[in-house]
Length: 245
Image 1 (cartoon, helix red, strand yellow):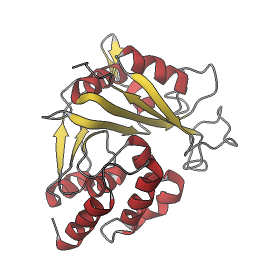
Image 2: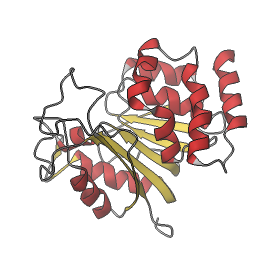
Image 3: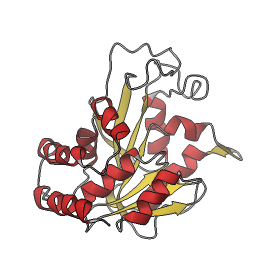
Image 4: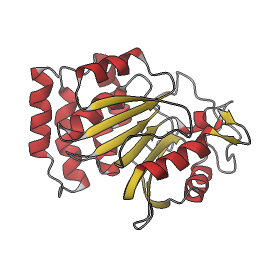
């Protein structure tokens, strides 16, 4: 880990005590957005993605242990590793990790790549948060015998979490009644369908966030570059009931 990020992580550990409220956490996380280690392309997406608010909503704290499902190019990998600080850890799980995430993990002692397939163990230890953003609809398109990757990832998330832990799911909203019928054609999924599936795996819906809602979005429109970043997105926080293992 280089000295510059070490200073950022140490600062995060100092300014993000465990008892802070979500708004206070979001304010603290906002300091991390300006890190010189973050690519300019990441910073250009911050206004649309509201990462400080979403991490606070998920309960990310200094010292948190996180299993990140399908990290893509590592936008959140980079932020989560800074937010959890040197006493936290991020297990970034992917079938084919991107070069950017692999390189980030090589340079940062609190990030490890977990390479596997749907249903595999997400982390070598219990975690506080399982995190996935803008991926759930794609999980539905990955068929696994009589099931799909979403069902297997939900089960794996439940197994990975500590009792009381959080499963954070964010995706593009589909029109009411669409269910899972537009995951491939429109890259959207109805939040009600996600709630049913995740709760079927043993979770309880704990809260919804409106941080990424865009009421003007036409929910019947396929996801295209022209609407990317402006889609109506749901953010769901599920919890693994205490007493469950």
